[in-house]
Image 1 (cartoon, rainbow, N blue to C red):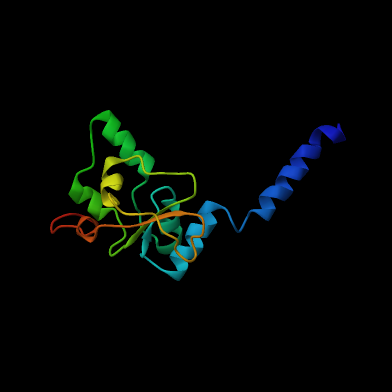
Image 2 (cartoon, rainbow, N blue to C red):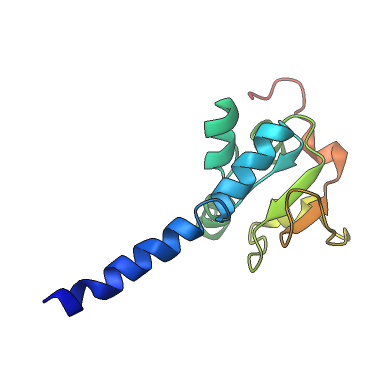
Length: 136
């Protein structure tokens, strides 16, 4: 019986070792040091925990597109951190939603201090600013 539970203890130890390097923790630490500078579409909980702001989740935007109810550019801009200049995905993840892909179209991936190993892109500023009449 003890041998059957041995892998569980080993797994917990591995998870504890990665506690400070998991994607959500890295994004949260970056957001605390640089509020609003980056948009994390794969980790929207980061903005909620750090600043109480809601941002778009890539998978939700993509689901709306597939369902035939795409988000308008105004709605998209209203759900982004105001003034964000970077978009970041953990290593191994890429954008799915068309609006997010358009945000970084023709932008090369680059290294950003604090987001080592992430896919980081500069965003097109005109897209990230809400138009008048849109709700934040």
